[in-house]
Amino acid sequence: MEVEDFGHHISRRFNEDLENIRSAVLKMGGLVEEQLDRALQALSQADSELGLKVAHDDYKVNELEVEIDEECSRILATRAPAAIDLRLIVAVIKTITDLERVGDEAEKIGFLSARLASADNASNNYRELRNLARHVTQMLHRTLDAFARLDAKEALEIVKSDEDVDQEYEAIYRQSITFMMEDPRSISRVMDLTWAARALERIGDHAKNICEYVIYMVHGKDIRHVNLDTVEENVVGGGG
Amino acid sequence: MEVEDFGHHISRRFNEDLENIRSAVLKMGGLVEEQLDRALQALSQADSELGLKVAHDDYKVNELEVEIDEECSRILATRAPAAIDLRLIVAVIKTITDLERVGDEAEKIGFLSARLASADNASNNYRELRNLARHVTQMLHRTLDAFARLDAKEALEIVKSDEDVDQEYEAIYRQSITFMMEDPRSISRVMDLTWAARALERIGDHAKNICEYVIYMVHGKDIRHVNLDTVEENVVGGGG
Image (cartoon, rainbow over all chains, first blue to last red):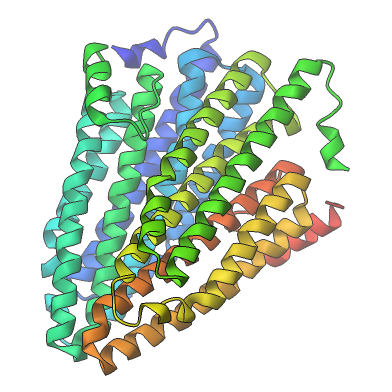
């Protein structure tokens, strides 16, 4: 329903602008997802070459961010959008910042994979992170879907699921400390794995941020830093 | 010179809007600086109560972010700003996101300080981080000054200095690994200190981001992800 709200402008050219900007964000999101997938593949297969390739390719994400940013400024300057259109543009400006930082975290995982590939037991690297990686990858994918469909209810579900990601990360962190104490020779390797886990946890945070912008875009409500029960009443009650 | 450019609008009310929004950002910046100072004080004095107080007070930063965000949307919707005014608003929307995340990092340092306060050798905690902390605190302060004076040249200097912060952080990180290998009983404590160092390093990143928005605001040039020598030519050549 809400998706169609963007289709009722007097200016057809304006509709196209808004549609183009949404497509560009989804294209950027797809690229970021691909970067993350390849970084995790590099990690699981101890493929140092792929890890470095992912890190190198981060510039493509950055280029898209700058392009979309310029397009948003152009639309703001020439169309002076209001209400939901203005919220869309503001949400896009914020969303691409978070997507770019997801790209940075994927880049980091790429570098860490390259370094970890030469460690002993490299094939074991991924095992400890597998669940967290799967969880965060899904979270990012659902986030981009919620953005595409302007689905505020789904966005709220994703915001809530970030707590699980945080808990999984904490568990990995505590386990890392135990590993390092038991075998001090593993410290370098375990620290690198902990950083990779941390990067995944941060990707979860960025996905959560984007979901908050989706809710803001649809309902005009800023739910950051607000108790989630209150939000639920508003978003679900509001028929979003 | 550039500061005065904001003072030549036909609508006096609009001038006031823009001035108010800049003041609000500087107020938020001052609060964030205060949070960071107190978090570092908690760390250096092993004051767990102060650490928790800092973490608790993060909501004040968040409230200011939401307020300024709403005000930006209101100005965009009612004044349809163009050129440098539009760039100011877009830069503010981005700046407060980074300031809020500096607040989050200060909150993290607050929590870590509280936990570290009960560790052995708590009084030694701060020594290893002192230089990095001083460097980052200064960087944040200079950043807010550059924002206040719309000083693109100074902003570029700050962007460049982020590399030093990164190097200091890397040195602390490598040293941490050595410490942990030498004394596995210290692992928990050293890990917490490494996270605090990491939080400082990230604050440096956020300061750098804000400086990039200052340059964009003044010159209309997006210097993110661009070779710094090219930028220097443009910014210095452009008389900023």
